[in-house]
Amino acid sequence: MLAYLRLCRFPTVFTAIADIAAGFLLSHAFLQPLPEFLFLAAASACLYLSGMVFNDVFDVKQDTEERPQRPIPSGQISRRNATLFGAGLMVGGLGFAYAADVRSLIIASGLAVCILLYDSVMKRTPLGPLFMGACRSLNLILGASTAGIRLASAFQQPLLWIALCMGIYIAGVTWFAKREAKLNLRMPLLLSLLVIDTGLIGLAIWLGDFAVHLRLPLLPPGIADPTATLVLWGVIALTINRRALSAIFDPTPEKIQPAIGVMLLSVIVLNATFIYFKFGNEGVPLVIGVLLLLIPAVGLRRVIPMT
Image 1: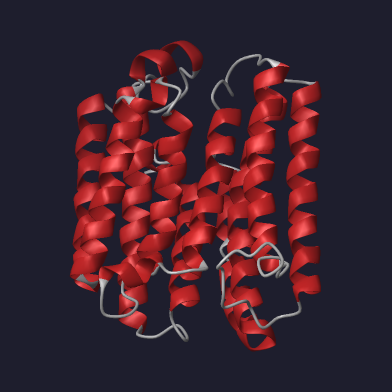
Image 2: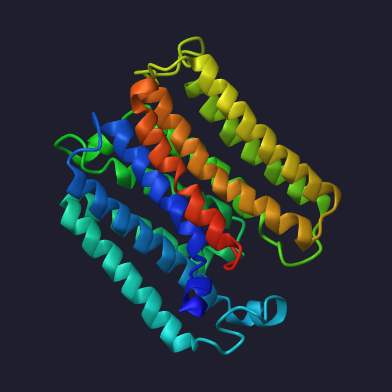
């Protein structure tokens, strides 16, 4: 079981569930209907884990050279069994999405296509980070897929802006992690950090209620004090940049991989911040619920690497 959990990098799945929580709550009045939310969370988890599995299935040759301890190159799991496991997760994810709504299945199918394209082909091209960012954006939108009565309801503001900014952020993280198993070059890491910060600044525009001054159609704003949400955003951005700059000054796997872990775990905290901004103090129980996802993610990270 541990080998399969390592294969799918299980601690990272909680970031995908946090996306669904944010997408659902930003497009619904509350966590209702609960069955829809649970089906969407299960769909997201299965699709995310399948992407991690297929990543290793398609990367056996590279992992044999750079990460021989991974489950497939080390012989703990055969490539055939890994393929079946990934396919089962993907089918399960699509099934859970259909159980939520037909509209959810449509978005989940697009997400599945992006996952397979990234893992099989795009990851080795300059478009790789963009496809990974698209996966994260679609995952957030999947959380809103049952809102309203039409599919277009999932693409309303401010969720569309948030999904775009999170996609940019994850594209930067993906670029930052591109050569995380080797001694890296400083310039690509620095450029990828600029992409990460671009996504974070885009989020600050909404969280700080700056959209009105910039004439961006991101209404409705949140009800929480934007100063408080900006402080939270600042803590997150400072933490990410501090770890990233440390890796840039010493671009070794020992520095880069922990920095990537912080960037991924920050997704949970960012999603919690979105929820707080929308609901204010009334949403604190929901915020705490999302932040609790950090506990299994951090705990499992000690025995199951996130990268």
